[in-house]
Length: 245
Image (cartoon, rainbow, N blue to C red; front, side, top):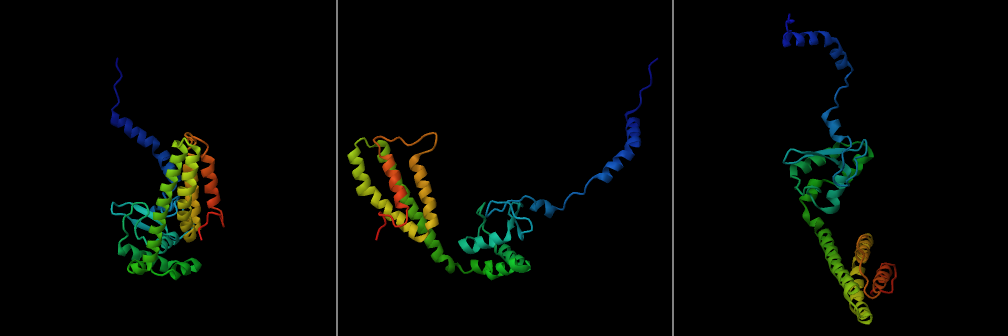
């Protein structure tokens, strides 16, 4: 004879009755989920510095138009505003509305201790945005340095063309020493006079460009590559003989 089949509902009821105690024990051992604010700040990268936000640092949360919430290190954000005069997000370039800047000022006012004193000493970021004249000279200087770097980069590209394409050694030396080297030295010295750290970074980039990437080094037609590299190392030295009066 065939045994009568048990109903699926009966099985479910039996399983629920037998496992009720174990499930309640597992629920008792389960750790509570952390609060949303805690989850948001754990391991967050500061969008300004692109580094993890230090533990215990004062933070400020900005909600983007698409609903994404981004956590900032409050001190680096305020420093970014006052140093650059740029009141837009570093990642998305979305402008911060005035209500957000007002919220930053309110957050600075609530920070205790020496950090709060440093933040309040920098002044209001909302007032800074409403007074763009204070950043006019700074923006002009930044644009001027960027223009000088582009001009110097074009001269470096011409040096590479001489190294890779010039087959006459004497003609290449004449063009480098009489035309390209003096022009580059003049441009680089102007950058170095305004910001020597920026000039050092530019020189590192120029030297790497002249050498070429590791998998495709610059082709040296007639031995001018070492001449260019020696010039770049000399012009970046203090009191270089290429320094213009």
